[in-house]
Image (cartoon, rainbow, N blue to C red; front, side):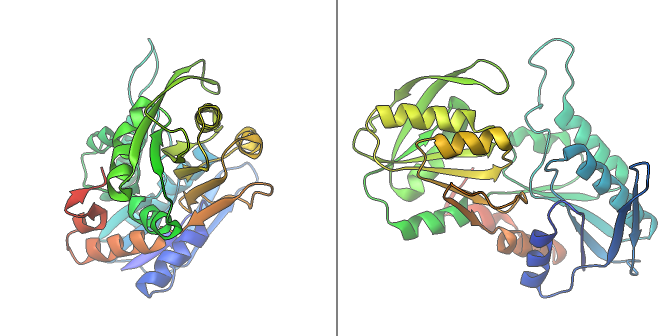
Length: 314
């Protein structure tokens, strides 16, 4: 088995390799003067079971192209099997035609990964679960939830209500409420455009309660911060936000600094600089991904990694 990393999240790749107990594979990735990417695999991979770790975090298109080139290099170097480990799968929000004459980019990215030569995909907390069906190769879909649960249980939050910031995240919020033995509420919202959200109402009782907002992805933090403001006005005490992929841009960071959210709990699926003026707890999913890689390599079951109390986190 060999593990290689693109440039999107090398610290996570190193942590995964350390968990498994092997060295990260050697490769050279550098740009040509015109911006094209050059890749060279610096060790023999003939007949090896290879795992390539690359998140499609910003700059998204650059990191995706880098992944395609690395997969192609590994395939031409006669790797026996190539698994694309994509902790954060970009373009996942474009998973259907919701307007005339728009692409289904999540499917296009799936086609490109397969065309490049990947034999298998390992990913985490897809924005829409049906994206697994866009692939005609095996997909192992993990959840960051077990890592989140461990951290939240240690905080011993009393009078807790889990809140979904929109109707689409209700399934995830319900799973959290079950394992945390907490109440459940929903923020009904209306989206103005891609960056602005107008929150409407809270369905559920949150007055005098500690609140846990759960979502799979935040970028501009519009949904989260609007929901938090509404919950604060409705009498919520402490407000925590639990987000698998915090792909935060400057707008999102500024909104979170000014928001009612007391703590943002997220994972290291996306590499980002430290954020001042905001309490961010970053939990590592290296152990979860590392264990999945070990099991894929030995053809063992991966299912138990996202089970709890006989139920599933999905």
